[in-house]
Image (cartoon, rainbow, N blue to C red; front, side, top):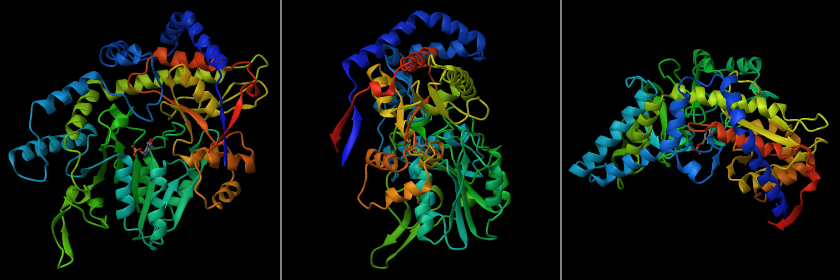
Length: 505
Ligand SMILES: Cc1ncc(COP(=O)(O)O)c(C=O)c1O
């Protein structure tokens, strides 16, 4: 199968670079304008100082990092403190009671408690299961939730694939699966449709409702009120907080979902490989783990073909937890507490507001817009993630792969594709069910690029992917200004002017 992609020429790169360079002349005036127009929070200067002292590698290496929804960034001190801790102690596998094992256990339990206190969770009510990432937390729910034909799985179109994937467990158990739609262009939920679906909870059944507190596609923050509304109608609620927690306060005494999934690297960059399922104890008791593993049992017998599961969290932490990295989770949480999640939130909100205003006003000389944003264009109930495509003066799309190629050439890290959130993408990009079903009738495994081409051939949509930028903890004005300059390099340029090449996949 052939795979069309762009060959970014030296001339294209040169042109883009000179555009970005020329933006430097306007930087001071633009920054002053930003500071006067946007409420940037009284702690702006402190976060500027933090970026310079703790995250200086970004500027030293000239990197413009705009993929915080993909992964957060760690500060220098976090890594140094962790290394110091590792080098000053002796830590063994925690599944034991020797001194080095107990040393690990003490650190790991301290990290567990810190997670609860960071989210203001009552330890009597909630428990923390460490996993390898948010997907690991979601998998526990998928494989252990007691789906059956007297229950159901309700989710919304706007979900990460790791939440969508739970439907396979529901299908296997004969539990119906229902998707509530989100509506373009804002990609917010149709609340009437959702409430109709919520009203269909089966009495006494195992009804699971899953949604993200913040979309990783559009940045939409779906209402947290749904948690209580759904619970009062007989639903267990799984709130995917992976994209929400890096820049928003989650207070588990104010909102009480039954299950919460998070990844720590998204919040503070380091360590990778650790996430958590935070769950209400009462609802954890409802889960049936379908297998056992080392660390999850009190005893198992080969001859008796039997086992007893551990109580509580231990039953769900398969094998050895990432015991040397868990202390780094505590260090990361302390780091965020010192900065203050509300300050991060305010900073991100002002930078996002600036970006939304700039992006929506970029126009070609003929008056046509350059940027089409998928999702809300005001700051009401949205976070710092913006997905969009670029269009030329004749409103012909610039392929997102071209945008990514040129962005990379000027050291801008952004994301393209569908960001593991196909439902929001399908609705935003107006791709119809029929074309999608037809594409899956080919049983040969397809890459995303091949699939995108197949859908394009059938449906001729604008595109099957988009560009995503996301701001976070230490994004500064220079980052967003550079992005705007980069986007300006597409003004008054014809999309056909770029060279396509055919590559064999
Ligand atoms: C909203 C959301 N949920 C779940 C995930 C899965 O996270 P991980 O890849 O760390 O398992 C992501 C990752 O981008 C996400 O944005």
